[in-house]
Image (cartoon, rainbow, N blue to C red; front, side, top):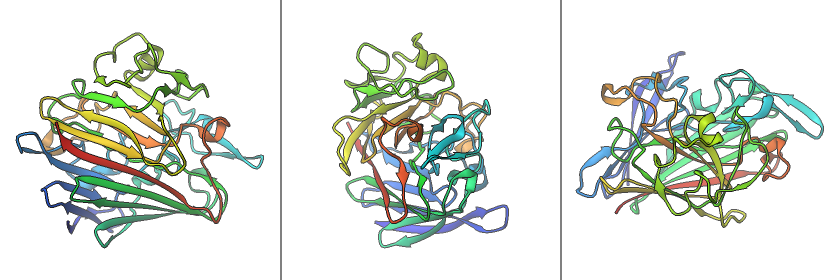
Length: 351
């Protein structure tokens, strides 16, 4: 496995932005940036050996600052939404930044968050390691926290992302990766013809403001059922509350067959036309599926392409949304002396 690094651009305060390129023995290539510890591109072959970049992104490093879609990056401290931006630790209430479009809730760690920060980076063996030090009080979160994102590409065509964190005070943490996939190749149309299967027989209903209610519901006999696999576009226009409120899929599913630190198959995404398939394995309890319902208006994509709605699907392995306010959800509290550690593996293959 080969790793190359180059300077890709400059931050607003004139620091170098690095771009790392990982290439395995099969020619699969992954590009990573220290802005948001993000995935910039993943180049894989189709069934005929033709290579395409299968993730959405931008041509310039500076485009990754403040992009609404959070393309390819690691959001934090807490990915997804926290109702009213409030939660309690030992009866002490904390108020986070309110940065959803309606100004009522907290999303992805705030308007800056981990995704719009320059992470320290280094090559360590066959991995690229990104580190971010989050200050006590940043976006309202208690405690100084160190976050680490380690990417490793192997010759089994697996991209392994290990996420770790430590804190000086009790806090909350939920880290994931927000890459948008289009297995036809980015810029080659929408993802509504992609087949998606989720290892999840339950999902989390939410309000019209996309805040989970606390209910864990069965997917049976609803458009939220992907247990047997189906085309993403098959039911996306059904008059179902979650699809109406999100303008498509933007919900969290609870993964089956969970166990502490158990690596679990979460999802399979495939495109019959190109033969490409990606499987996601994770130790996380949930997966947020977002079908790019609001991509129009984001920064111009690679090769001068203008992205439109539904041109990418994000499969975000993560803790359950608003967990600090939902006692029945798995805990997302991190205490001093503990290590937060979760794994996401993207495995690439062909039909």
